[in-house]
Length: 318
Image 1 (tube, rainbow, N blue to C red):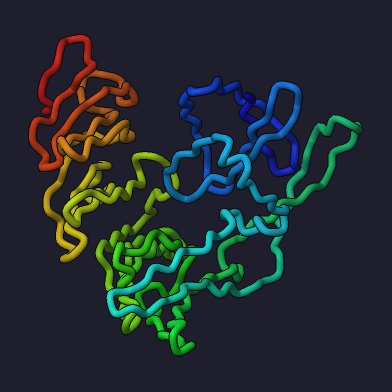
Image 2 (image 1 turned 30 degrees about the vertical axis):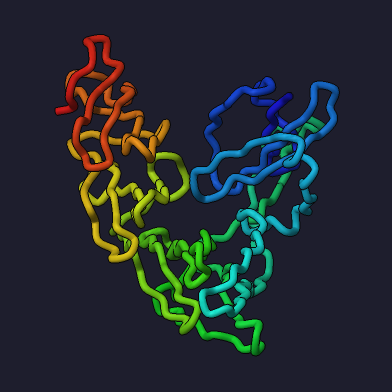
């Protein structure tokens, strides 16, 4: 099976192959579209990279459920929105969550293709792209109680200026759901909890930066739900990219999982039962190339932080 990137002009660029049962890691950017295809050219399915790290599993069930989306539905560079499921709350009420999106005129950025393949003269081309100050499509959540057909107002104070408001999940009992708010300008990222009975909103995590929050690649953005009402979050708040464990009931930081003058590059695996994280880090040895990756391990509580692949045996990170 071939992996192909769909470029802005709709062309297909091959990025190697994936065999049955094989796992493949591929760097990408939010909004990029990827296609799976058989060696004979038959398309199998496609996906669009989201703003957070995620995995794609391709099996027959996934292939059968593929829905074709036109380019028009992807003009804002974001994945088509999924419809959240609506569980029944403890009081027996059923709520429906929808997103209402404002529509704005398409904005084009122009560029010159200096050496087109079909002619000698350069070509002026365009690409849909929002520039600073442009109006953008804004999706806002609307909550309805189906039993009496009433809308539950949701306060927008904590997500007033969105680049994106992303639905994450419902609680098991349906009494609340969580949203990820990415402020326009990417200087604030909030994990929000909405209580469906009253529509109240609170911030569990409120990440902010005077420069930029890197929200679209593995390691730089991590939001993992852990057992016992905990979650794992990545932040550069210390000046270095590290992992933090939160209590998502109180919103308090339980502990910094990783610390030091070095960066977590990406998470490889999490063992929730053992409470252990395996990850790659860079810059852990001051006398080495700062981009040299080391395979490491740490407990959820920040103890037993060790380098596993250094060439000098297993030892603590200093």
